[in-house]
Image 1 (tube, rainbow over the protein chains, first blue to last red):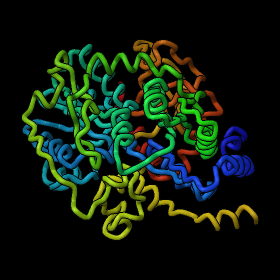
Image 2 (tube, rainbow over the protein chains, first blue to last red):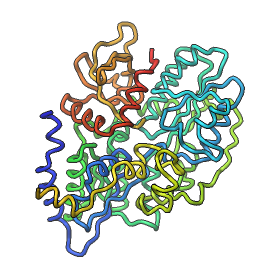
Image 3 (cartoon, each protein chain N blue to C red):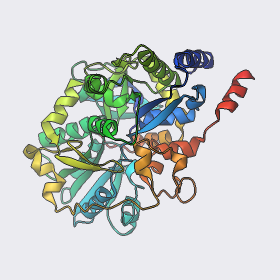
Length: 375
Length: 90
C-alpha cells in the first residue's frame, strides 16, 4: 500500500491544487483537453475537476477507441461476420456497440459467429482449431493496440496460417488531435497527453502541437496525482509563456516510444488516405490499413465490404462529446434514453467513454469537496 | 480493452522466446513479450500488459499503483480479468 499512497495522498492533492490555483491569471479561462479515455475515467472517478479552480475546465477528448468507430464500420463488420464459413473475433468492448441494424450481440442472436477474445493472439488458436473457416479479427484501437495486431499478423505469417485475417480499424491519435486543433468550435490552452499510446509512439509526435500551435503538452500517468501534477506542469508552462512537450509519466513512457512496436506496425500496415471517425467525420491519413504484402490477411481484400456511411442517430450527440464541445450531461439523451445498459451512442458503451465514466461516477460539486476536505 | 494491466513475469517459455507466463491478480497465463525484445523481462520483473502483449516494463511500485487503479474501476477490470482467464495464447 505504501506505493499507492504516493499517488493518492489527499494532502498532496490539495497542495498541488493550491499551486495550480496560484498560477491562474485573474480573469483568464483555461481549457485543457485530456485526450485519453483512461484519464477521463480517473478524472470523474476521483472528482478531480472539483480540486481545480473554476477558471480551469477539463475538456474530454477523442481517445476512446470504441467510441470513435463509426456505425458504418460496425455494419461492415457484421456483414463480414455473416459471410459463409466466417468466424469473427472481437474484443468484448465492441460487442455492444450499436450499428444501424444492431450490435454484434444482436447479430449473434441472428446467427453470426462473433466470438469475444482477450487478445488478437487468441484468434490464431481459433484459426488453428477451425481450419475450414476464415477467422477475421475485428481490429480496433489506437497505437496502443495496433502493435498487438501487427505482431499477431507476423506470427500468423511465420506459422503459415492461411485462414486468419484482420478487419483493420486501427486509428492514429495525432491526426485526431490536429483535427481538434483546427476545429473552430473549440479553443484549447493545452493537452494532457495520452499515457499508453505514448509508450508506443513516444513523446516526439506531439512536438507539432507545441511548436506549430503554441500549446503545451504533458504526457500523463493514470493516478489522480499524476493528472493533477500534469495540470500543474501545463499551468507552469502557460504562466511562463512556454509551449513544450513534457513527460510526467516517464516511469512508463520512454521519450522515443517502443521501436519494436513501431517497426511491427510499419511492416504490416500503412496509412489509409482517409477514415471516418464518429463525431469527427472524415480525417485524412488518420487510420491504418493492411499493407499489400499481407493482402492474404486483409479481410477488406478477401471479402466485399459494403463501406456504406451511416449517419449517427439524430438524438445522439457523441460527436460533440468526442470533440469536447459538449459535456456528457449536456447531451439530450444522457442518462434518460441513453444509459450503459441501453446505449444509443458509443460514448456510453465503453468504460473509457466520457458518458459512461460520468454516468457511473456522477460528479461531486466543488462545494462538496471543500466540505469534505474541511471535515 | 484499452486497459494496461500489470503482471509479474513468472517464467519464460522454454521453447518460444517471445512468450512468458505472468501472474495477474493470481491468474497465470501466457502473454507475448515480443514488443520488449530489445530488453526482455526476466522472472520477477513486472510488465504492463495490453491485450496479451507486454507493452513496457514497470517497477513494483508502479505495478501496485496500477493495480489499485484497476481494482477501483470495478466492472471493466473484472471483465478484463475474466477475458484473460479465457485467453488461449500458446
